[in-house]
Image (tube, rainbow, N blue to C red; front, side, top):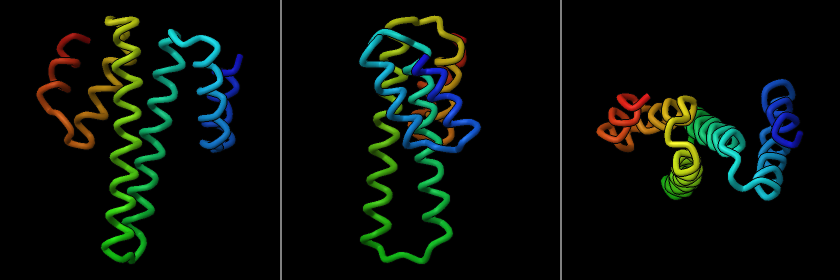
Length: 121
């Protein structure tokens, strides 16, 4: 139920903060739930993408930009950890394989790993 409510808040209310909190609560209740891990990782990717998009529209100092880039990398690291955990629980999860590969490709984090994940999917 928490995962479904988080998904609804994310998609229809555009409330990433509340959705993230619900996904995290859902993971506390069921730490092996692949769907929740995948949804939270995907949400974190969207937050990183929004941060990058907002940064590109602002004229900011180099130190502010470096802080935002550090934040984006931290968010993506969290997403990657969740995708890895999800794949440990279900190595055949098509949704997780594709989402994780997409993130690795989109942010040029690891093209070889992305290709391997897609080949497995």
